[in-house]
Image 1: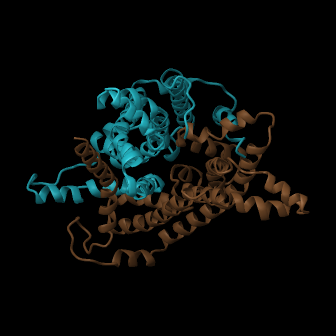
Image 2 (image 1 turned 45 degrees about the vertical axis):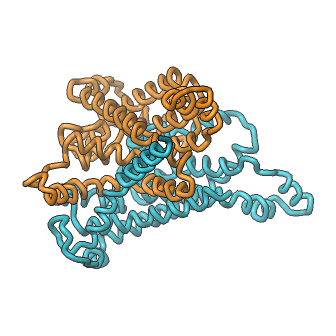
Image 3 (image 1 turned 135 degrees about the vertical axis):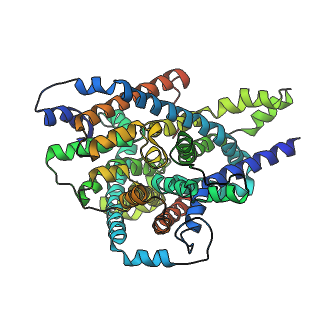
Length: 258
Length: 258
């Protein structure tokens, strides 16, 4: 059953639906104007999400792994709970915060910063906010696995030999926590490219992602299964190629622990 | 100076953790709010939960989702344990390929897996329903359960099994009386992971459920998509989230204990 999964369905998309006629029309279509924009946008949003998650999450993972002391278990639980909760519910929670009658608008109104409720939803900003919100735990957990193993004596040695904080961080801490950054990046980037729920519930027409493009092909009666399949094969190929390049040139083939 | 930095790091981490919880809190608080329209507190009420009890649509979906998650959990810990035992004990042809295969769900965007499954079912003529959802969830639940269980088998001392057998226990007795108790925390962790993944899953569920089969995530999605934010939906999502939170707490309990 598991093994039947991939190979058949790739062939199947063409055989079953076009009765054995081979065509690359769907692939050609996937690279036409509007669709190309959607592909590029999805990759771009996924990349931005990954980078923002590293920047936001690294200090937190460092604090939990190295400095939290007695609070470590509680802090870990606070990261694990959203990690274990569904994207859909957390995205809906973000919706309930940002919609016109939501808490965010109420706070801004109370503070007299605005006179009218703002449309905080359905724009590129709300999509990025939702992406970072959802994926952040997926970055913090692998980062924590690396910071927890940090050998503090190495950092102290660096300092006693005269390196300043920045230098210690760049030359010792960062290289030692690299496996966590790599693992976290893959855990965030790969699903983020195909993300559906976040742009669908928080995004407007200006931030359609490839997950929605594929979804629509399979939901509406007007959708084309063959085109949806071609689009999804393109996504997989792009993601696999990028991950392989990443492993080859950035991690230099290092094994990373997930 | 050093103290100051530690404080800044701690405060920053608290802020990021708060960011993870603000939307969730907003959703939970306003599921108890006695007003339909805006996020202005008008007093405590349970009426959204009460109206939920009387509506059968959500309960049916909830029931289906729990049934599926329990089935997925049972099958994946059985097959996951068997896989983990085989992987950690025997060498066999194609073991490396099999090892890599377990990581596929991590490296392929979920929507692609979901549509591959749908195409496979259609190609094979399998009618869509609860069973196809269970099979779909198993494709990710078994690998993850196997990975978790295997990671807990590192350092397993096989001499205790040999001891049991030399004292006259047969293979089955040895497994249930010796092996299983030793790996039990790993199996429990695997079960929690399988349950939560099935319970939380939206994309694969949406693609593999048949028409008219309501699942909790698809119901929540449809309500959010059609009606936007509402106190009833806040209540549904709060109940759904509370189960994930219990799972996360149990997971932390079992994963920190060996």
